[in-house]
Amino acid sequence: MNTAFKDTSWLSEERDAYVLGLLRVVFATLMCLLVVKEWREYQADFFGESFHMSLLPERLVPSRPAYLALMGFQALCGVAALLGPWARPALALSALGGLYGMFCDRLHYHNNRYELLLLTLLVAMTPCDRSLLVLGKARPGVAPRWAARLVGAQLSVVYLASSLGKLLDADWRSGVVLLPRFATARPFVEQHLFPSLMTLLTAPWFAHAASLGAIASELFLALGPWLRRTRVLALWLGVMFHLGIELAAHVELFSYTMLGGYLVFVTPELRQREAVWNPRGGVGKACAALCRRLDVLARFEQRTAREQTELVVVYDRERRAHHGLGAWRELCRATPLLFPLWLPLRLVTWRSRDDAG
Image 1 (tube, rainbow, N blue to C red):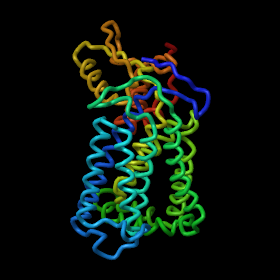
Image 2 (image 1 turned 90 degrees about the vertical axis):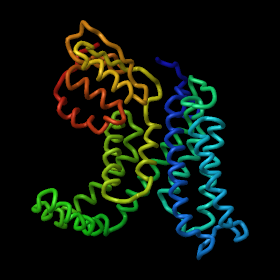
Image 3 (image 1 turned 45 degrees about the vertical axis):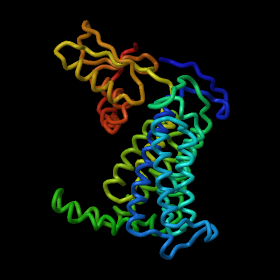
C-alpha cells in the first residue's frame, strides 16, 4: 500500500502517519513504566518530606497526597495515550506532570528521565493519533512530519552533547575513565570467557582506543541517520550501542527511549517491499506467519507462490529481487526484532549480486 505524499520542505512535508502512531504507543508505554518507577521511589522516600531543592516557590511543592494524585493522573494519561482517546493531549499532560515533579526537586533530576519527558512532549506534537487506536477512530493517510524531525533532532543533540563532552575531556580521550570499568568485568571474563582476555582489557592503549571509538560512534550516531546512504548502518550501530549499554550499566529507561526515538528515521510509507514464500511443506507458511507478526512497521506485502522453487524471495522498494541469504538480509533490515542480524548478513552477502526484479 503506497500512499502519495507531499514533500517540498521540512515544514510542509507530509508522509504516511502509521509510524507516528507506533511512536505514540512506544512513548506512552515508557511513560507508564516511568510512573511505576516513581511510585516505588515515592513509597521509599517522598522528597517533599525531606531535604529538597525546588526550582519553584515552596508553596507549589505538592504534599504527599497531592504527589500521589499527580502520579495517578500521569498513569491515567499514559494509558489514555496508549489506547487512543485524546491521545495527544493525554501524552503531553503525562510528560508535563513528570516535568513538574522534576522542577519541585532539582535533586530528583536525571538526564535519562528528562530526555524521555522531552521526547514525549515532542511526540505529542506530531499527528500520532491517526493510527493504532484501540478506542477512537483512526484516520489513515498522510500527515505533517515537521514535529517528527524535531524528535530526530533531539536525539542528535543528545549524541552530540555526549560525544563532544567526552572529546573535550582529557581523561575520556586517554582512556582513564574506561580503564577502571573494564577492570570491573574481570570476574565475568575469567569465569565465562578467556582469562587471558583481561590482559587486553586492562592495557592502557586498548582503553584509549576504545574511548576514541566510543566518541567516534556517538558522532556517527548524531549525523549518520540523517543521510540516506549511512542511515541503516547508523541505526544498526545505535541498536547495538544501546544493547551494550543496557547489558553493562543501569541507565533506567534511557536505552529504550533512544531506540524508540529511532522510529522517526523509518521510511513512513507502508508495504513497499514484498516477501514471496513457497508454502509447500509447511515451512514457508510458518515463516510467512511469523514474519507477518514481526512486521510491526508494515514494511512487507506477504504472499505465497507454489511455483517458486526457493523458500523466500524478497523484493525491495526498487523492485529488485533478493534470493538466498540476500532475501533474509532484506527481511532483517526491515524487521525490528531481527535487525541486529542485518549487518552480519550484509557482510556475508557483500559480494553477491541481486537479480533485477
